[in-house]
Amino acid sequence: MTTLALPAPVRVDVLDVGQGSCAIIRTAHGVTVIDGGARREYAVRTDPVTWMREHGITRIDDLILTHLHRDHVQGLLALARVAPVSRAHLPYPQIAEPPMGDDWRARFRSDAHVDSPDGQIQSLREFAELTRILSDGGTTLLPFSPESDPVIWETPGPFGLRLERLYPVAGDALETPALVAALAEITPAAAQTPAGTARIEALIHEISEQANAESAVFALHSVGAPAAPGLPGGAIIFAGDHAGEGSHWDDIRSRDHDGVLHDALWLLPHHGGDDGPAPEWFAELEPRALLASANTDHARLNADYWARLRAVTGVAVRGTHNTDPVLMENTGSGIALMFG
Image: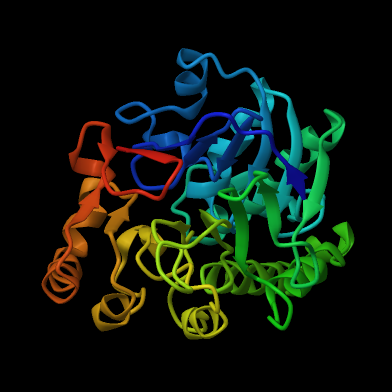
């Protein structure tokens, strides 16, 4: 954990990276980047590398990857190539490039759909390259686990702010690290065989399927005097892609003894997908705003879910796909949120 000196408010920019996620948090201490989007959409959206250069940002203090899918890891790889990174908070330890047989390499397409075997293994290849670049550059790699310190940084004083991991924490059981370790145990010789290829495909598919349900969740919230007893108010929830079968939102909520999830601004899980919590679940938490990092096609697919969210919660659902950058109102004390 890092304790920061913070004479000025925290600034959070949620960038329009198309179908993907990228949030950049700036404090008097430094810069935190949560996820990086996918470079294939930057031609018509916001490229985080260009954005950082335009804003005079030359280094990253804390780089965070919520989970291993290409629309989150690919942009971080681009950032790590051009900017020094002090600390990297990652879902797995450093890994080597996953095994592939010669026949597979000959027909491999790095731009394949993320849900295909090629797309799934490309995400792992990019994560392997990310960890190599970070390690070679002297970055401190901090793979998070249920046992690791969930606090990324905290500002001092009676009205401080904290960036904290809400999932995974102590008591959570993760499946994907063991799957990644099993993949690393496949030898190059075994990868050349049909049985080895089948094993690799099965593992990478299981990793990809489980990644969303085990996506890390972070919150930027007050650690000072609450707005109401037990309810800090105005936190920003970075929900990653934590959604779908096997997700843990009820567990996350049940241990939220400080009320961080209540009266918060939500970056909705899985780009506002309908595999997130039910609208009634959100309504009980009385959100200040519901925000989704998504491209136009994804927003269209989830239009009915967004309409139910609006109707049940009584608050707007805003997507990065249809807005110029706008300063969100009614954020927590000391936090300025620019969205889009």
